[in-house]
Length: 254
Image (cartoon, rainbow, N blue to C red):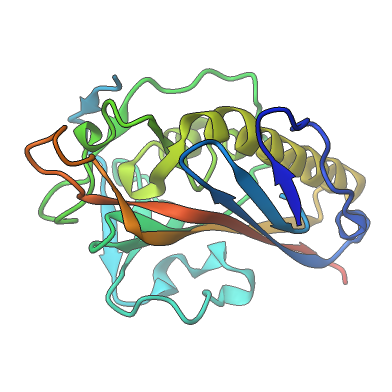
């Protein structure tokens, strides 16, 4: 366990020998507290809503977009009432999968693969998408985050994708409240380190591999936004106590 917060260098990341292997699975977990105190467990690790057509296809099983999971196997032990979503963008196919809790109004996880064409230098879309109410009821909305000190934190990071896949990550069914400093400094640094390590390995393997990634949340039952007294509809969205990431890197030959 390593403590990370103000006064602690966020550039010092635990070395992971497993990232040098051709096939590996890894898990990290990060806890965020209200006063910017975070603990890292394991290996490593306002905006206007736009009205264009964004479709989250709610499915009974992930068979339709199961290729985002290693061996088409989704995580077990999750909330059975959560909604399974194959994430779409204007009917252009599926870009990743999410398990969304309508009770907590945050995703429990998003499953995705690293796009080797991704670039951290590309600009971010300015707009977040809200899924049609006929598709996903009781979801979080942008105003739930306003003035709370929490960012809309990506689970499937836009920097891991390219082109339309990048735009498809900007949906509130792929976002959970993250403390602003945690999201913009610490979590961003760990995402960058993981991304760089995986891209380097993909280059070494000449693209003959796939990095399967699942990033998820652990909802805190006692912390919700907006806070009471700040909104007509307070405490709609649960704040995660932990953010975790699991990685499986599969080489096609081995």
